[in-house]
Amino acid sequence: MALRMWASSTANALKISCSSKAHLSPAFSPSRCFSTVLDGFKYANSHEWVKHEGSVATIGITDHAQDHLGEVVFVELPEPGGSVSQGKGFGAVESVKATSDVNSPISGEVVEVNSKLTEAPGLINSSPYEDGWMIKVKPSTPSELESLMGPKEYTKFCEEEDASH
Image (cartoon, rainbow, N blue to C red; front, side, top):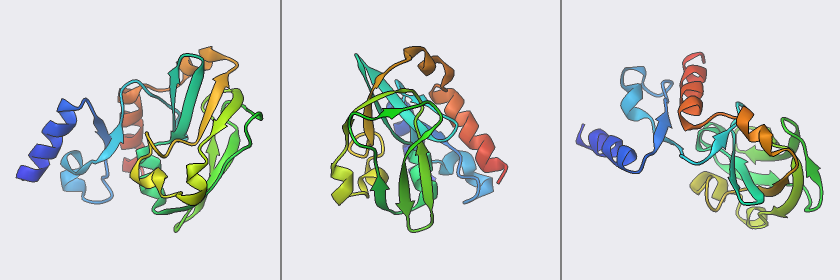
């Protein structure tokens, strides 16, 4: 009980919300949720995140998504200079459980690819929002960011999605 209270108060202090993992223990789902959802990010309902800073947006998959995938063993990414379109696939993540397409939450030109993921795809598991980012994009339609969910909406979306499974 003390550990759950510590985790909850730490998450609150860090302004981190979490999505439910009701499938693990329905009776304790609010205190058992450990998926991180960060402020300052936007989220797609296909479980990708985007952080727009200046003229570049960084994109990756969410902590919730990597948790459901399990151990990531391979990542397929596009080449720099290519383009991505909102809602369309740009790569794939292969885990010990499954292979999943990764969709772009926004449209634009790929300006950088996280080459570290070639040698260490597990960075997506250990650091989905920092070291495990996938691509950086120069947005062609910045207004697309407005169609994405904020942290509270994404947390609620994940809770409802997990409850329905």
